[in-house]
Length: 351
Image (cartoon, rainbow, N blue to C red):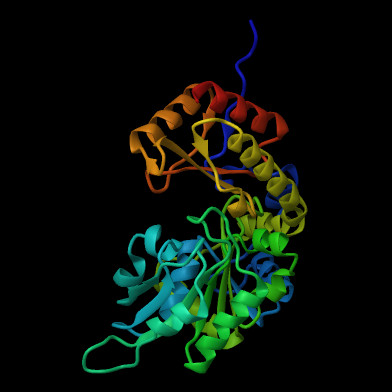
């Protein structure tokens, strides 16, 4: 009897298992108490990463959500607004934390493909008055998760930073998949991270580490961030066992990303050839593919989305839906070419 085929898990790049090199590094990591700033492996990760991104300092965070929320807390005061794109992670997937933890309100912009324009941002900026909450800061996301992994170019980022500087607003970059954006644009991560007051990068997405993110900024801001992290419950002790995997991820991960992007492109092009399934190939810039099954021209059926997800799962292919109207596939190092072929085969059968 033939063994069952292994699962092809395309739900997210967060599902990867630690590589052999990561497991070795974790087992051998030198550790100390990080709340006391005595974990040598964490300190090395923070130093290496800060130099790589061109920022003065970095702080190891248990999650990207905490990294984003610590940054928002540092750059604002309760009752102020955060200008961000309508599909941004901080609006949809961080449990209302900006309001619950920092008393902030999102002022959203409907950007094309998850990207705001300087004119849109300019129109959203509000001064303090008797009628309006003032704008605290601008937040960008690169790459844009809900938009299907689309990216800001360096020029687009700089034009938005210019608007913020003209109004003396700080700017935070949610760069959870910044290394993917760098590969897609041909820019360095340091270039894409430049000019921002704070930047968050996830180690557990495109870079493949099991857990953790990093928050970057000036030495003064990161010193304050350490205290806010503790206040939010993110103080960690002998966490060098995880930081060690992050160091390997910074080394291994960027070399894997071109393959992930190529796999996503091949998956998207295969889907585009299947009748009844739609994918915008122009939006496939990184490792995310958004599929929309349509029962009628211009209409998306939530029932069709659920049906496709069930059909995929029954054949050992896992995908996700973040909005109920599209199906998201995310390529990563644990899915090979055979896995992509299998996903396309199942989709053809379902269509």
